[in-house]
Amino acid sequence: MHAVAAKGCFFLTKARMSPDLVGMVAYATGWRTIDRDADGRPRRQVTEVPFRRSGWPEGVRVIAVRTRDRDNGKQIYLWEGLDYTVQVFLTNEPVEAPEDVAARYDLRAGIEPLIGDLKHGWGCGRVPSQSFNANHAALLLKLLTANLMRRYVLDHVPHIASWRTPWLRRALILVPGRLARSSRGTKLHVPERSQLARQLN
Image 1: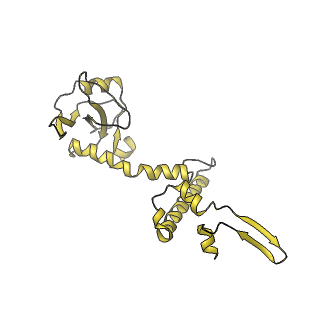
Image 2: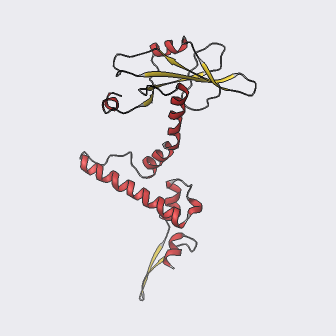
C-alpha cells in the first residue's frame, strides 16, 4: 500500500481479518442497507469502520460489507442470529461511497479468469531462471504467444473463442499425426477434420 500511495495512486484491496479488525467490525454501527431481498429484508449493507493499523499509510479507509447470500470466497460469520457474512476492503480513495468501493472490487472478477488462463495455460506463473532479464523476455514471449493464439482464434475459428487455452491447444496445435516416408518423399498424415489438415489442403 505504501508503494502505491507514494506514487500518488489509489489502491483497493481486501483487509487481513485479524482479531482486532474482526472485533471492530462485529461492533460497528451505522450499517446502511444498499440492497433488499424480495421480502424487503436487508440483503447487503455497508459501513465505514474507524480502524487503523500502525503500518498503514495515511488516509486508509476501512469499508465493511455484510451480505446474506454470498456463496464464494471465505465466509466469516460475526453476528449471532444473523445470516450475514462480511468482507472488509481497504482503500485510500477519499470520496468514493462505501458501496461503490465494494462494487469496484468485484470488477476484478472479469480479469481473474484471464490471469488464471495465462498462469495455467501458458505458464506465466513460472520463473525459468534467476536472471531478471531472461524472466522478463520469457514472460513477454508467453504473452505474445497467448495474444497471437487469441487473435488467430477470433479471426479463423470464432465459434470456439470462449474455450480455455488447454482446449484451444488440443483443437488447434496438438494434432496427432503420422510421418510417412516413401521413395517419392515424406508425407504428413493428420486427421481430415483437424484445423491443420484444412490448412495443409
